[in-house]
Length: 454
Image (cartoon, rainbow, N blue to C red; front, top):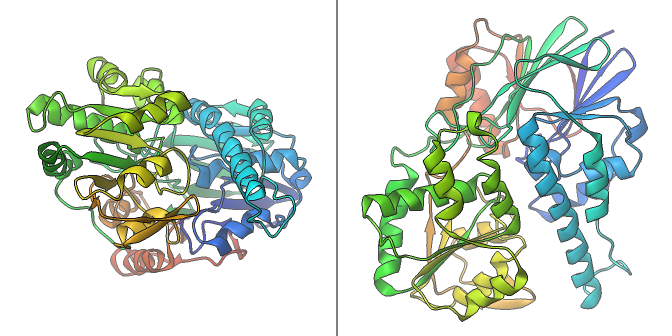
């Protein structure tokens, strides 16, 4: 019987990654992500999967970001009882990310109900913190290069993908086929993470295309961030930096440390990390020393070079402080979290600065700020954007098109087919064309819900 892949997310969009592999009456889900961004994408989170959770025999995760793991609490609550397989780093990060995601879902529903803003009465969370904590019991960890069988006869091997702690590419061997899922590939020149390992040989490759239509600038984040923070320090302003709690927060913290060491910015410039999730993630770097470039001294500085803000009271106290200062806070696309309070407070002052640190999914508040909109709606109020908006182009944790093509090219033999996934339509199609023209390989951008033979 043939092996098939159904694309339940991450097809034609950079979010909601879910790939259902079927063979001989068994089903395995590679990644189980939430849709984020546009409302019509987010509505997909509420639609049932084409298979029931009971029909899925195993879940394998490439990494912990919510667009790859955030649907798991819902899957488990609705009846998935089998194991969730991942690396130790991914398990540790999911233990931080998933309960926080459940908490945010509950907060959003409560806000809608309190202000009677929902068409549904009452508005319900997609899942709760408790749902997330329950699904964590199903996690089983495996180290890279150690094959395991999530389903008898289905062999899976992880290899390091860079990107964030625990991130892995997944090689699945089943039914005489070798299928490689790139996961999110890190950069070869990342400030924090080790580069992705060379891909193993495969018949079918699913490769991500987040930056499939562009090349990263030569300038690195330290060079790019330095002048912005120098301007901020001179005028005594407050920089609000929306950060992804996993990965981006730590990269920006490390870049600030390097700038202070170089004397490029005042060593006394106060820096606050206002995200309990980011604080917890930062501590994990000491527990996973083999996956990043930092030595013991730099890893220690990551956790001690800024003031770690944990409680709501500590966060509110920042409102009483004057600049200059830098506040890093989640979420990275300004879709929720404590960063919204800081934006509402500081975005209206021309001395201040909003620093955008990475890809902003279309439809998010971060994308609107980055595009230069002069009024942004926060907590039901219009906030005038007078602060300087700085968009870093060098902070991405994803491989660009050239690095992705180089990763593919390092395979010993051409695969039979490549599916270009996890990219907006333009980025995915441009990468598809480059794979076809430069590598002379067969490449396809699959459609959402489509099924192909592997």
